[in-house]
Amino acid sequence: MQSLLGLVARQALGRRLTTHNSTHSALLTKAGDGLRPKPTHLTSYCYYSSSSSSTPGKGTGIQSLAPVPGLDLGHEKLRRAVFYVPCSEERKIQKSFTSAADCIMYDLEDGVSLNRKGQARALVVEALAGNSGSRAELGVRINAVGSGLELDDLTVVLQSEALSVVMVPKVDSHREVQHVAQLIDALAPAHRRDKISIIAAIETARGLVNIRDIAQADRRVDALLFAAEDYCADTGVIRTRSRRELYYARSVVSTTAHAFRLQAIDMVTMDFRDMDVLREECAEGAEMGFTGKQVIHPAQVDAVQKQFVPPDDILARAWRIVRGYQEHYAMGKGAFDLDGKAIDMPVVKWAYRILRRAELAGIDVAASTKAAAS
Image (cartoon, rainbow, N blue to C red):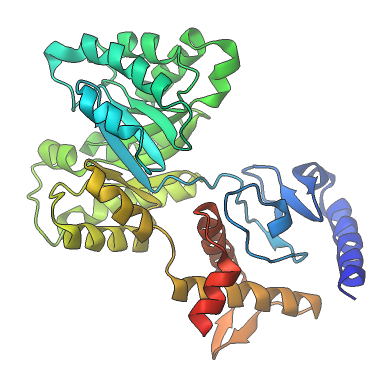
């Protein structure tokens, strides 16, 4: 019966895609028993199944043949903790080789004094080479465009085969991002140019008002990051424990990132010894739509990465929503009722995204939801 329903659903979808727009067929690729979208910013029909997963998790166990119009999960990436490692300190570089952070960001900017920039460049090359076998994404925060240091930074780091991402600090306009992108094209080996992404750091009022242009500055931009301390220094905002003075700026960064299908990386918790504040900020950031957080101390990594995985009760609800959607789709129904609440397409998309994030984190969603239900 299941295979028959699958065949009917595939045939029906094939007819719909051909009738609606023949170009949609080019957006889908075979992947095991299911279909999976190629990453695209066009409206696409998303098929999400454990058989098509290439992630470390065991998958959701969902064999979905129900199309979800407009949902693109191809850009999703695991980048919960962005851990800064100053490249002027060999001891910290060595410790980074055992870090569990999703993204290790070797720092040539604020974490390095001006009289040690040259030494730090030599050390960052060794750091990238020494950690090249890590599962973590490896990146470098260069000095700001216009500092007079960025060209030397990029000339060195772009030769590394292990480099995955360049963080551009203090971005005030799209021009800084485009300048870095042009240098990547000019300096990186040809086979590496399309493998290097850019994180644009929003640290000033000017950067915030220009954020839409920054987000679209170059195809390599895959994340926007908010730096609270520099923002406060630029604007004179007074920091409080409540963080209410930063709510607007953080909301703008998160919302703009999602508008252009980018990741949103939240601010640093400067009091790295206070785990309660860290967890509070993480929960707040996740609620605001941030996908990860900057980290300045190894003790923060584990807490941050746990906080940016959906909790069991949210996973269980997302699982039930997706299962309910598939069942009602097979019956030809759209919106449906779950626990007395209406479930329509926006809620279904939210649920799929929650499950995908958990899957990327290596979580066996089926097992987690069963445990939460028992």
